[in-house]
Figure 1: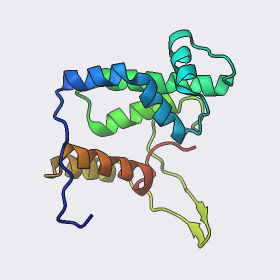
Figure 2: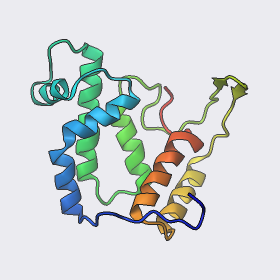
Figure 3: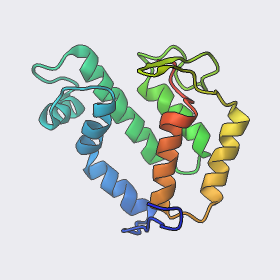
Figure 4: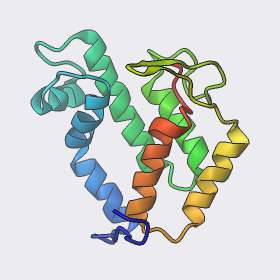
Length: 165
């Protein structure tokens, strides 16, 4: 995709419609998010954990991760007016409460990634810079779809902003 191509929004959902979609597809969203956490639970097991807080043949730590992901999505349904960075920090605090050094906080310590070409040490950004980057993205003329994808990439790679895992 070259810089002149723009992603268009395929759907135009209201807040209520988006919340309805999230609620009715919660198992699928948790299953997909669980792939980032290396979960091995099936959608059926996830559904059982959401309903009963347990499922056969699912490790306790996996069930706990699924419950935390569920709580993160539930928080997302309620937090409609919060600033984006605050929302991201609170979701991280919920989802990573058991396995992060400082859940819900911007990373400010050293990070080092080993790669085939040697070590990669990403530059860390302070909270004001991250907030400014978020605001620039939100104020841009990109479609909602493209904003979401760019935000995901930013939070996943560029800023290394949350986690301390």
